[in-house]
Length: 312
Image (cartoon, rainbow, N blue to C red):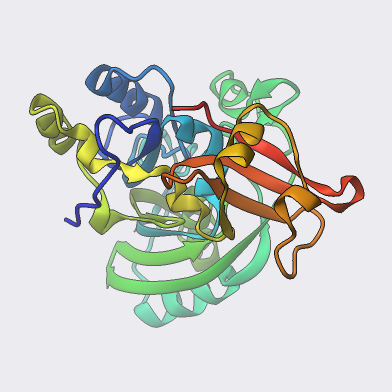
């Protein structure tokens, strides 16, 4: 376990907890638990994990909830366990069995060959048992009523797909994929490609963007640190997911201007070399505190505060 030094007790205004979600917990369960542990009201999660899944679940605390979308930048990595021979209505082990077929003819070579169609860019249709909204309702709400509707396919990309083990009827895969990818759908479609059916029987998210499983913490670990009044020591700094943006340190006058939600003129602030319309910057005060995200608007000859954090 790698411990990343977080913000100090007095300076804390927000950050992330890299949680290793236990099985049979929903992402909402984890948020509810951490609200009790940290006593912070404004908490959210970045990237829902199904109850069957374990692994990386980034949790936004305080002002970091304003940057939740940055958690989704980059790719994700999972370890999938597939069980051949059975399909279910949910495409995972939580659902009702819908078919049973013989898998005895499957070999590692056949499995390797079947994986090829799932690499690169292709379209994937969300499962009925998913949180995707259609007609104002979640698909899983319709599925529980026995209603199946046509779903729009989504473009996904699989950067890497590796067969780790083939202890039939179980197959273990590692996948690196884009946002919006459904591991359950891969399991189902892979089983169909083999002709014997399959479902997802295990799922571990090993990375979500910059958050890695080897740097994550269990709920028990977080509780132990909280019992000692030190849970903030586990918090990843709020700008952890913003490192792809250039940064600038503002003088006290400019800091006050930005904290009042007012734009900085080019004459007042200048223009970094190569800045283009829509360019974003991380803005810090003289004490190295993140205070805002600025966006360049050349037509207005200035930098507009896009997201402003409350003054400490």
